[in-house]
Amino acid sequence: MNEVKKPKKSLFYYYGVVVLGILLFNILAMPYLAQQEIKDVDYGTFMTMTYAKEIGQVEIQENQILFTDKDNTTIYRTGLMDDPNRTQRLFDSGAKFESEIVQQMSPLLSILLSWILPLLIFIGLGQYMSKKFMDKAGGENSLMFGMGRSNAKIYVKSSEGIKFSDVAGEDEAKESLGEIVGYLHDPGKYREIGASMPKGILLVGPPGTGKTMLAKAVAGEADVPFFSMSGSEFVEMFVGMGASKVRDLFKQAKEKAPCIVFIDEIDAIGQKRDGRVMGNDEREQTLNQLLTEMDGFEDNTGVIILAATNRPEALDPALTRPGRFDRRIPVELPDLKGRVDILKVHAKKIKTQENIDYDKIARMASGASGAELANIINEAALRAVRSGRHCATQEDMEESIEVVIAGYQKKNAILTDKEKWTVAYHEIGHALVAAMQNHSAPVQKITIIPRTSGALGYTMQVEEGNHYLMTKEEIENKIATLTGGRAAEEVVFSTISTGASNDIQKATKLARAMITQYGMSEEFDMVALETQVNPYLGDDASLSCSVKTQSEIDRQVVALVKKQHEKARSILTQNRQTLDRLARHLYEKETISGEEFMSILKKSEQPA
Ligand code: ADP
Ligand code: ZN
Image (cartoon, rainbow, N blue to C red):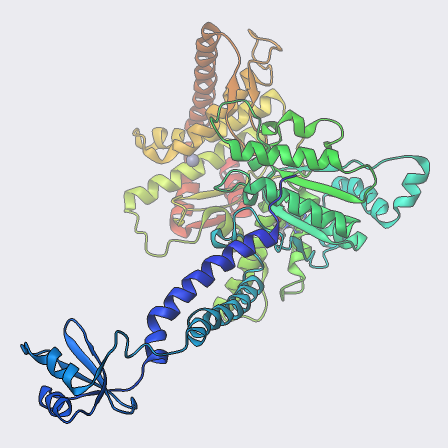
């Protein structure tokens, strides 16, 4: 290894500082130290003293004359005059011609003063300053102190005493990680049998699902040090710096073993090296260093590397092959029970009303990640404070779901009357189409209060339990529901607005997936025409079929959406009266609950 040693750098540094210091000292301080007192006199005094033979030494300079009295005690200075006989006169007076009246210090003292003294001063100062600097910056890399040296940076972080019990839900992940905890507690037990722990474990899942928390909890449960760094921190401007950070990190970790090393966003360094990104030497070096380090330590050294990513498919295969990150633990979005648990864990940290219905809140917040749920609870507490209450209520929580999902209520957004009617019909259109198809309450709540996120209305869908499978019919119904908003506008106003762009996107995506991913079209049968690029970030899928097939897919997608749109339109036309009644109600009240919606619906279905 060609690690740059600390003393080398320091010497170089001191050398520069000392030279600079001495120069400064000589320029600024020396004149004062070396100066002897000089008395300014007029030319007449000089002449008088010459005639009186009172001059001891004399030096005639370019623009002034320096001279001393007979005892050499005082130095005098006077200006130059056009005086041709001056030299003769001075000679006659017995003055001694000198070349350096002022500089009469002993050479030794002079050297001592001008070189040795500042040297000592600056060495002392330099030492003091560098110590201070290192303490303060924690030895953070600095160009002045030399590149690539990060010996002083301490990577160990506090795991904040997080335990598995703080992580709600995620039981499968906890179970897998429990084994690691057991190993860290008692590595001997595993060594005896000859079993070796995986060196690296990859936590894979969407953002905010608690991957960092789980890693901390492993360290917390096993009571071992927790080293943590984000992948993006490794990627430095200068080639080689990231690699040296990796080296440092593992050096420190090995000293503290058993311990946990956590690398967040590992995809920042571990991306596939497919030559697409040209010339990213730095990342490549960093990745290579990481691989080398992982290969370098033997099994059972007690260093366990946990890494998190939400783009597992983007990782370099070298990272995921056996002996490196060979175990993969999915950390998924929480299901209903998980959401309830997470809400409860976070609600413990704030003051709440007694009888909060967490189940209802969890149902409303379907699809929310752990981080979002934590945010919902916090928003509820903030809302309670704003309204001057001492504890958060059910209503606070319900409102804060919308805040987190749809943004704050836009207090001063003014919709024209026509717009408000349009939004009311649009939202009711969605809900009514859904209700007529499923014969159950389709929504928790509908509001037409504009949100800061830009949504003009908002329908909170009900999610009954967990759905792992969806039938073809269910997806078709869902597409019909999505087109319901636009369909209502068409049925009622015979015009269409821009309010449906989000619906259109969702409907298209579903229809497309039916054909290309779920094998739900007759023509293509069970052929995968598309592969999901990134299941965790909801990225688009990439097509894997011929251009001809592609256009056929497009044709079918259009036909599918069109059919469902037609269906939605006919549902709404048949229930025109109910639609009007519901829309009027929503227009007047601006927010209606699922129960209100159903009771109006039931009333209109049974005409008295
Ligand atoms: P990730 O690393 O997966 O992006 P984090 O671990 O940083 O997510 O989680 C962010 C925050 O979300 C945590 O600090 C915590 O408050 C909350 N959170 C996420 N998942 C959970 C969970 N399962 N239980 C409790 N809190 C959670
Ligand atoms: Zn809509």
